[in-house]
Length: 309
Image 1: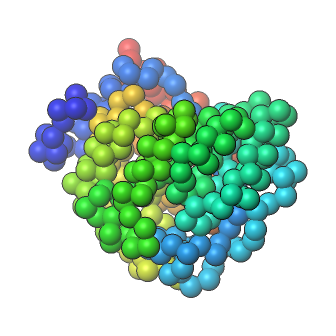
Image 2: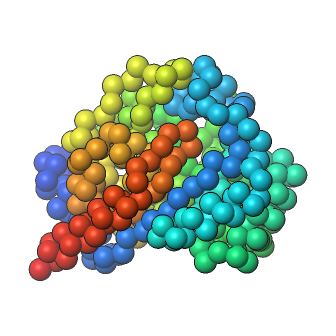
């Protein structure tokens, strides 16, 4: 279905027709699988890039915390806490266009120590990287590299001008060549239309990503998008369903913005084909209590089971 799906087939469907098709695909292709991950903001602020949505970018007027790479003991403790909370994956995230060699070495040491002490898969999101740097991380024990496209190729120049969409694609391809799984998605609500979101999903499908996070813009004061109107619930759910139909094999991961934008309607995203989520905090915003998320996962699985009867 994903290879032949055309946007015209999507736009004519009602929300609930789209959600039903997406949930059927999710359960047929991935069963009752539900994934949990968490991140650490291991190096924050001071980014040279001008991504319009980000509090850490060069265009933002100061609200993001600013600090260098965290102490390794602190990161290992955070990985231990993530494992205790039920997360299967722990991602080390740093700000900046890409890591210098010294930072790659620090992250590699950190990955190696986590793998030796904590029962959890380790991911990383360090920006634009070449194959050699990614191979260093893979050899240290990294299993998956995260690098979002952020927006479709056609819309991307409205999001960032300090690097290109093609550089992001190249990083994803470098991760593949280094033997890593790939986590890549984007952020919705930047002013793009539904067809832009469809195009983004199709581009990610072409890259055969293993995991696809969908972030929902929470406008941050001091950024160029601080006055952007929040996406409607209908638009968000239609987007989740489209991503599932175009990436039937992938984990569709609801990430930033799910608590504040979806609020009490979060569970509906998982009835629209999503089957993974980021728990705990994000880069510059807080999440909600992990116990609440685990309770929601239990309810989602109950609903999936009822749908298959």
